[in-house]
Picture 1 (cartoon, one colour):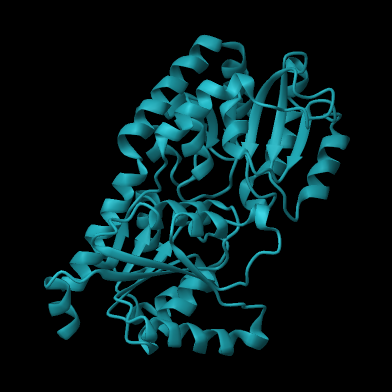
Picture 2: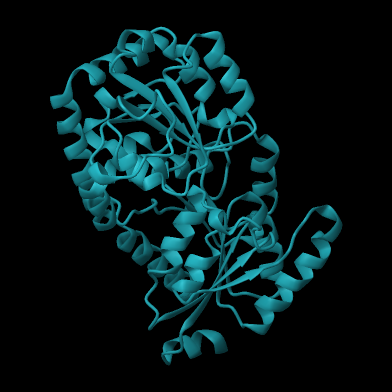
Length: 388
């Protein structure tokens, strides 16, 4: 009661964010946008990272948080051996800072957060759900077992919220949907400047044809193996005019390269690796592709739409929500080889269709998925939970 009364007298609400690491991934970028657009007259943020400070600062978001004036605390988790030490430190920090709301992101941070939050007597503990854990039944079970420690689960879209209520069997009234957001104005600037982008780092024969761009970690979830096998049936037909860029790195890199070699696509598929300028690459693309097996609210699709790109995506969580009424020509079931082949050849051959879909995608994202809108929804949820 004392803490609630203090808030009514105008004290700022102290919000602690907890995430596994602060590399330049989708969840991490969403956290950066949220923490740096909070109403600082009402909220006081601090960001905790379970891992230590990334050695590769070019791949770390820590400098961007600090540049925006948001404090970051790296807890130094390296594995099970020092997990108890990290837990105790996190609990002490939450107590010392008298945190009002703990908002965690991603599974491991959710687990640490809900136990440390309760140990530190944080009034409101929220867990973020960013993907449908279809291949992780133990994680779903653990979420159910620890549901009494959580005041709210914040899902990145309605599809994830429905999955969490039905398959995950989480309490319906404590599951909320707040989609990711993008700063559309920044991407519009990138789109205007994309013609002058410097791609001298791209080796021949790439960089001179129209581009189908895919972005994501090279892992089974993203479906790049399926895309490349499927591409063997259509890429040779358009290879004179088109090339495929796969931007990202991960454990499947070598296996994907073997698929490319086996199917004779070495001159069509370019592995760009991890790049710090993904928005710039998307702005210069001619078509975006998302062949994922499952998703949450795919940031790469939001960013591609923000720069006016047409897309072809598998029908997974978040895609229909982003594309709205224009989903049909830009979406097909995962593993539907024929539908994917037919739709990508249609999009590749029709510049007017790509331009129109890209324009409509940009307008929808600007209206429905702004960073500011997402942030206000988080603020309203936390305030409501604190009042209760």
